[in-house]
Amino acid sequence: MPPRMPNWRALKWRRPSPGPPTHDVGDPFAVARERMVEEQIAARGVRDERVLAALRAVPRHAFLPEHLGHEAYLDTPLPIGSHQTISQPYIVALMTELLGLDGDERVLEVGTGSGYQAAVLSLLTREVFTIERHADLATHARQVLARLHCSNVEVVVGDGTCGLAEHAPYNGIIVTAGAPHVPQPLLDQLAPAGTLVLPVGEASSQVLEVWRRTPAGLEREEVTPVCFVPLIGEHGWRDDVCA
Image (cartoon, rainbow, N blue to C red):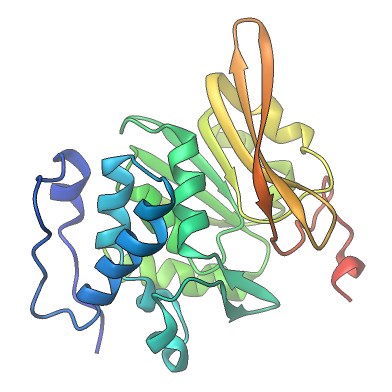
């Protein structure tokens, strides 16, 4: 049975109401999703109410293979095929909050994967372009996003390390794989006052970095150690790093 559709547009432009959440009785995962947000995300310091509301709304189980649905709201990344994973919910929330979105931005995501991060972003900004090098993952993500009526997301197959110049510049860029260094094309495609969030480091462990374009130039901030799959591409790791 397809997942029950949240009211995406109402959530996007309405500030979350104060007080305890109300659960959709037709959604068997609503309680687990609320527990995920409260115990895994808000308890660790994510405070942006719009980000928390988006994580409450997006059905993470819809982006996973059916046999993993019961694990959808655990505090862990999960495999989605093609040696890729859906990110840990806390990391999705943290990286999204670091973008500092107010609702009218153009955002580029590098590494569509399951499409879950793009769905979260779709509630928080005007338009999302997401690029994935694995055509099978891109096709599946496109199908799930369409079922959830994420009409402001465009999924593209290609080398994300090169960015997506035809739609640049971007107010926000988020990279969901670990890079050996910051890909120059992504910096080049960052708009004035734009923010780039990405993991940088070794193939097996990285540090989450935030780059901001200011009138004085680019500013860099290190946030926290993370562990992502390698970012493969012309301006990332070679494909054999996963061999």
